[in-house]
Image 1 (spheres, rainbow, N blue to C red):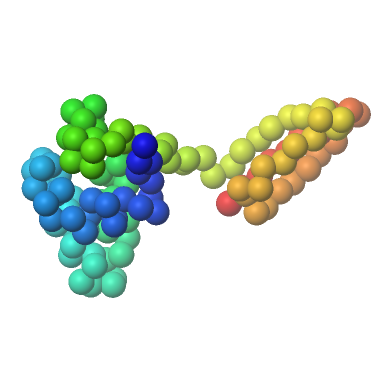
Image 2: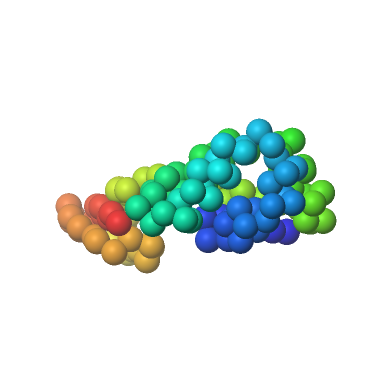
Length: 117
């Protein structure tokens, strides 16, 4: 199984001209990404093209990718949440290490956690 995410999608699809020819409906995204690789001040355009591509893939597109790579393809979901709020018992405290900034608030035996990137 190949999992497409923001770290590997450029190498697998955007640098692969043969793969791009199989998905002509995304030519505008591939072209804007290529433009961003030639001009550093357009880096945000390239990243937006990658995210737009990942968000607009359909089941038929994923089938084309699976056939090309000869393996099943899964698209990793993009986490758009900047802030996460959780409430946990003090006895069962578990923090995820994906966020760097953390605020804790305790009310009796309940612990409230807010974290952000």
